[in-house]
Structure formats: C-alpha cells, structure tokens
Image (tube, rainbow, N blue to C red):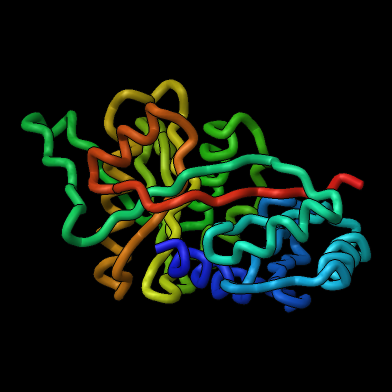
Length: 255
C-alpha cells in the first residue's frame, strides 16, 4: 500500500500551480502562499537521488524564499532518506497512516432523535468556505491564519474532483469539517479533520470522515487514507473503517 500512497503524493503535488521536478523529487509550489505545509516536496517511488540532486532540491526552495521540506513514505523509496540526512535534513515528524476501503467503511448510524443527528453538508457559498477555513484554523491551534486564499483552496479542492464537508454550528458557522483530495493512482488523501473545542464529543469528526470516504468511493477511489495525530483520533477513524497502512516521514532543512 505504501507505493500507492507515495504514487498518490507525486500525482497530488503535480496538480499544484507551480509544480516542478528536481532529480527524483516532485515539488508542489503554490505562489499564493509561503506555508511550508502547502509548499513541500515528495519522492518518486524507487528514487535514488544523488547528493547533487538533493542540493538542487534545496536550491529550488531557497531561491523562492521557502523552507525545504518533504513528506513521503520511506518504504517506497528507501534510498531517499539517507541522502536527505547527509545533506542536513532533520525529522519534523513521523506519522502512521490508516487506510479505508469500501469493504471496511462503516457510516455512523442516525441518532434516534432528529435533533441529535449530525448533519454533514457540502459548502456552497464563499461564506461557507471561509467559515470552514476559519474553524479548521482554530481547531488546529492557529497553525495558519484563515484567509480568502485558504477558502479559495478549499473551493478548488471541491471543484477539482475532491470533496469538502462540514457540520454547521447553531449560529450558521462551521462546527467542524475536513477535506479529501481528488483521487489519483486509485487512492485519495483525507485531511484536515477538525472540530471546534465547544463542539467536540458529538460525533462530528466521525460523521465528516465517513461521509468524505463514501463520497470519494462513489468517485472512483479504491481506497482513502489519512494520518492521525493521537490515540483519540485514531479510535475515531478506526470506528468508521480505517485500518493501519504504513508510515510517512516529514523532513525539513533549517540550514
């Protein structure tokens, strides 16, 4: 499965507005933001980069004033991590990922009381997209500032064959949501699952996650995968049908 996930990562980054290839790497540059979580590289499965390739990769980031950063599944390209570490890349994080298939997906049942049911929606208006970007920013501790550009990226995800789903709060804003990329190489990445603190414990994350996976299966994905941040979130994802798939490593170059 790790090769499918890594092949997906390559195809996904090639969709970025200013994507480029450097040696055995693909870099997904987006001129609309300097965020290292948007502008990053990944390795082509089976790549065996030279030290010169890695130097060129670093230069591609530095000439744009960006932090050199990669996300990849090391099992799909065993020669990549040693080459990066020789050049001074260090570990930002190591994440396990989970995989869901149509056979394992479990959509949460409807609550018996209508007022207790979690209603998952697709965004329609610009206000919806901005509300989702704002809520997810808060849910993730302000890792990025909500903005019209962030809302526009969510809209591009929805309009480009992926999906964005959310649960509306009582005041009409967003209580929680997530997004899933368009399928590539038979799989799709589900990401950004977040719920505002005041709305947690109500099944929002599970409902949004299951709805997104189901949506992507209807669009041709054979699998949907995601990374999780802790034991609590892992339990949520496992309840709706996600199972262990492998490991991805995040590396960055601070020099």
